Amino acid sequence: MLIKRNPNGIDLPFPSEITPQEVYEDRRRFMARIAATAAAGTSLWELANRAAFAQGAPAQKLAATRSAAFSTNEKATPFSDATHYNNFYEFGTDKSDPAENAGSLRTRPWTVQIDGEVKKPLTLDIDQLLKLAPLEERIYRLRCVEGWSMVIPWVGYSLSNLIKQVEPTGNAKYVEFTSLADKRQMPGVNSRVLDWPYTEGLRMDEAMHPLALLTVGMYGQVLANQNGAPVRVIVPWKYGFKSAKSIVRIRFVRDQPRTSWNVSAPNEYGFYSNVNPNVDHPRWSQASERRIGEGGLFTPKHKTLLFNGYDQVASLYSGMDLKKFY
Amino acid sequence: MATSPTSKQLTALKTAVFVLALLPFLRMAYLIATGQPVDPVAFLTHGSGDWALYLLCATLAVTPLRRIMSSRSASWNWLVRLRRMLGLYTFFYAALHFLTFFWFDHDFDVAAMWKDVLKRPFITVGFIAFVLLTPLAATSTNAMIKRLGRNWARLHKLIYAVAPLAILHYWWMKAAKHNFEQPIIWGVVVAVLLGLRVWWSVSRKPAKLAPSVRS
Image (cartoon, rainbow over all chains, first blue to last red):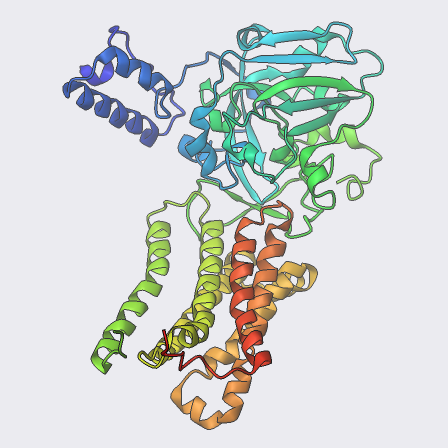
């Protein structure tokens, strides 16, 4: 059948079992459109190329082993919500902007420079990163500082795998992540909403915690551009903005790095930004959260949990006043 | 040459404005009922707040438009006949905005709502603006206009306080994200609409009803 095969006769990937129906139906509609245009006379080869770059094109699948120990059994947020409700200011400030504008991001070739207080600085391209450690699928809760949350099956491996490769020196107390800031690919970088490039940071012990995930995929496929392709971190016990997207540099430093939101509004966004229902944001309570994709206006909210429910990180902060170090 | 609309035309115009101003509400209701917004609470909160502000500006634009457009040959005074409806729609969207906050953010918990109102300055000013709008909506009937007499106009000057408070509410809401584009645009609109009134009252010029016919 025309809509199931590309011109090379290779079966297109079937949606992973976690992909909601409307998503693959969307893709089928997309392919049907392609076929309809083909009938109008355009060469199939050209169309196939175009399809590969179009937003609705099927993404490359990633084989990964489900890590039950690190996964919640809560219901995953629909793929379409997770890819159409994003904060990624490099592509605009509206939640729908990243999905609309991130098509211009070129995720290959892509290199990540890893340097600073390390014995073996490295520059790795995305293929080397994909092979650095076995890929795992981990279903994490994601809590946005704005008061909403999702449940997302990410694909990646513990960031510690990468950190061990570069052998940080005794001076490496923090890790700084820098995101791409290219005006040609990222229209939002022209605005002065934040000081570009976006930088984030973790304390060394936080970065070494097995939960901190170097992430290359979601829902069984490579990251969507609007979700921080091709490589990002996911730090599930912290508010979402701590998890830098589209990373081009990882630097090990002595002093606490400046982080974009903290520089922008220090009284609202602390360096730590651990999920904490007892520490309000100055403009709203953090006691509860709206779980995206669960229903409509009348769906009850979820109670927000300390460290987003990841109690295993509590020991990292023993003795710290979490109200002071928010 | 423009002339005032006949009463029939005015009725048609009022009906059109009524329907147009209701469309944003119908659209939001439709999208939410069909489950389309990813975060329906945020969608309704932002949508109702935006439209309350747009209609507030439309209400405040009536008098300046009437003054600027009117000339000896054409009176635009009939515009004032649309003002009550625009004002009531402003209240309608503001009430929807408040209801969303009271209902979906606080589950009708008055104590929790008060705590939020008192604790967070951007909510405090938004709440004050809504409270000040309420008597204006309540006294919008012909009977109330008659009953209050001169005090009616005095009372309705409250709208001059509501508009800057609404802008401040919007501004502080967006402040932490340095996303001032929209608050600036609407701040300028409100500043011009109120500034014209100040200018006219300070310069005490009569309304520009009779421009020179030399030429």
